[in-house]
Amino acid sequence: MDKTALSRRSLMAGSATVAGMLALPQAGAAAPAQTKKAPLMIEDQGSFAVGGTVIRAEGALDKYAQEPAGQTLHGDHAYIFYQTPVDAKPLPLVFWHGIGQFSKTWETTPDGREGFQNIFLRRKHSVYLIDQPRRGRAGRTTAASPISTTPDDQRWFNVFRVGIWPDYNPGVQFSRDPEALNQYFRQMLPSTGPFDLAITADAIVALFDKMGPAVLVTHSHSGGMGWRTAMYNEKVRGIVSFEPGSNFPFPEGEVPPPVASSSGPVEAMAVPLDRFTQLTRIPILIVYGDFIPAAPDPNPGADGWRARLEMARKWRDAVNSRGGDVTVVHLPEIGIRGNTHFPFSDLNNVEIADVMSEFLKRKALG
Image (cartoon, rainbow, N blue to C red; front, top):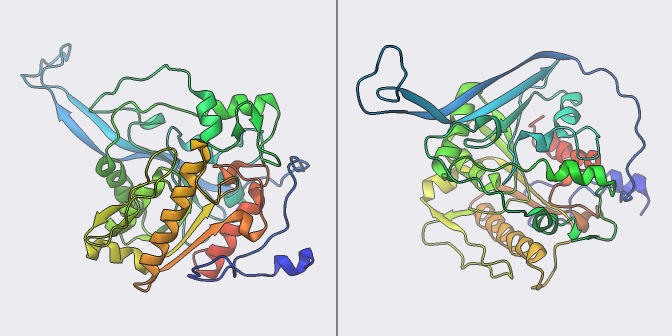
């Protein structure tokens, strides 16, 4: 099949397989040539905090406020930066980072190209970038956690499926320029407080209450919080989830057994049926990259993603069996190879953006 024929294949709604998915030409591992871009035309931009809690220290407040007694602390909110292009499409895109990350993950790529922030601004989508509670610019917390200084860069190199340190995976869509790797490692941030599913997801529920209908785009750890957000706010009109890794919700009494892996079991969670049903009412696209083994593997950095992909397919089937519209795409199965845990910032991220744009178009989301 030639490239023209491949490019015409459409993303099929609610498919239980990837047979009908958009098949794009395979990209090489070299960075694409840089061309001068047209100016971005931004009509509005800004930032704000949303959600959060307030605590107060016991005691009487001294009017000069030199001691903690009686004072308040505003924390546990999310930080949001937004941009609206000229002639924006109706539904904004809300981008939520993964574990150990912050909004930088959607901005300039580690090797210096445009990330999804600019790519989708150019495609006339308003973009909202999240720093979740207790992370990045939303670091103010009401419950502190120790911040580790234990070296762990090489572990992340493996878990993010760039390769097995110090070797890159063959054909990986990641720049081998040492500076790109330096930038990649410097995207990591600690949490300033303990993780709390309700506090974190509820802040984004509050965001949708404030901004109105939009499409939620999640990555990795935020995938599970994205499901919760959609279960608690009907203004989430669709979800694109890149490599969701946790908290797949199933109806009470229908939770599948954990999926074993060499990195530990991947467990689903039980939710009331009425909450689960909310997820059957919106289109959902789940995307996984390359270098995920087909069978149990002793490398925990890769095998954990095999288990998560298996759980995602079980979850797709559970949602679709109740009339939902979930599609799971494993990129190598549609001819797109070499992607890491971060397909949206890999060398072929424009190709990945095309997959997402085709989904949004077919589902009348943008």
